[in-house]
Amino acid sequence: MFTFTQPLIKETNVFSRLPDEYRRSDKKNAWSLANRGGAPVHSFLEGPVFDSRENLYVTDIPYGRIFKITPAGEWSLVAEYDGEPNGMKFYDDKTLVIADYKNGLLLLDVDSGQVSTLLDRRNTERFKGINDLVFDSAGNLYFTDQGQTGLHDPTGRVYRLSLDGRLDCLLSNAPSPNGLVLSTDEEVLFVAMTRGNCVWRVPLMRDGSVSKVGQFFTSYGPSGPDGLAMDESGRLIVCNPGLGVGWVLNQKGEPEEVLKSVAGASLTNIAFGGANRSTAYFTESVTGTVLYTKMSAPGCKLYMAI
Image 1 (cartoon, helix red, strand yellow):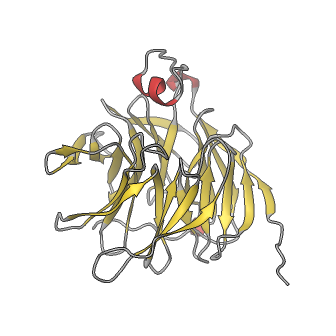
Image 2: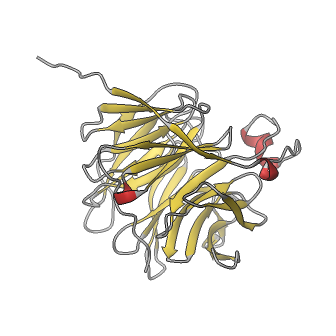
Image 3: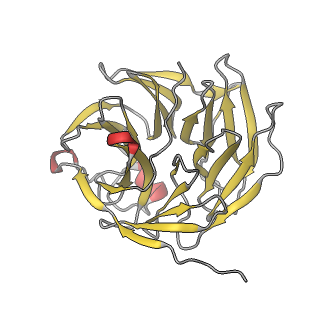
């Protein structure tokens, strides 16, 4: 007889919030008009990632800013430029790759704050709007091209950029592809489909193609899955803005834990940090807050290109 175990409900804690000196309220912000109904926004935090010294970096999409947060919770502005930065991962020890909705794939030198272009077009065609990215152990970069796609226009794309510059389109029929992460054995790519309110499971074939793509998890509510992470036990953590929770899913797609935001419902992305990567940190974007909670399994190591 089938039995379903109720997931453990855990509340997060506040790690740090964006200082008032960095909060803005530009009512004519173009990003806010397209994505927040024109409401004034002081910030919209995303893209959390740790460096080797346990500093946490986050993006601020509408104002083109990258912040560094020390282990003590102190904020500093690393870069500000004409862009809309979303997901980030380290290319090497001092260089971030930024998934920028406005400009494509960018590189940021975290010491100087200098921003340069990695890839802004494919065969002279602009991307719809890049959202998030992840490296595999060989240095291949997987990224989502979300734009304004959704159930009305399921033409979002998922790409793989190889170290030699080859760009493969793995998916072109995705309804709002957002966060993505690899399985522990790197044989499966999981992709959050925000407007489809689900997560797709994308098997990666040995010839470089994908096959038998399926729906791994289905959520509900006004805004679907966003940022994703994987822990070393093979559990998938799914940030779900709109509900203000992080789903911790076992390998069957069943929720084992539900991590609840204590600072707003827009829980957008996740990064593992702390001793042995045993703590999950989340961006709560609307309130400009970073949350955390201790986890029962450490997060998987993030790879770089080199």
